[in-house]
Image (cartoon, rainbow, N blue to C red; front, side):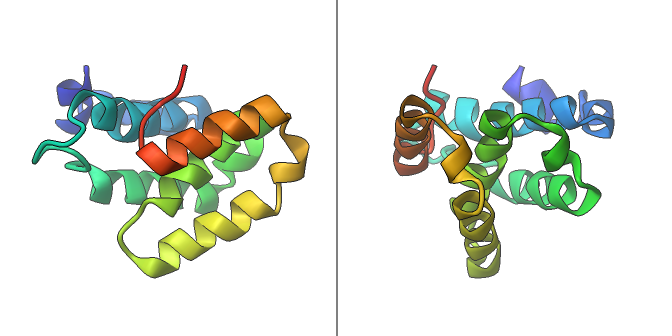
Length: 118
């Protein structure tokens, strides 16, 4: 499924906030879990950065619940451009008080490892 998403098979998902989140989860968190410590880790990071920035620009992030939205910001914080990382950090810091301690712990793990914690 990650490969199909990387090839654009599910690009139409990005028309909806939940679909954009699903693509980010697949191409960043799931992909990094599958390929941790290999040359394929972070292979789709430029695409993830683009999806995250589009979600914020279009206001899609605001349509999601706080925990879902936080995943977009965590993915941004692992981006290569410092500007995207800083924007993700600022957005996350501005909403993290709305998350439970358990949600914060899960997101902290995801941020540190670049993987999805389920």
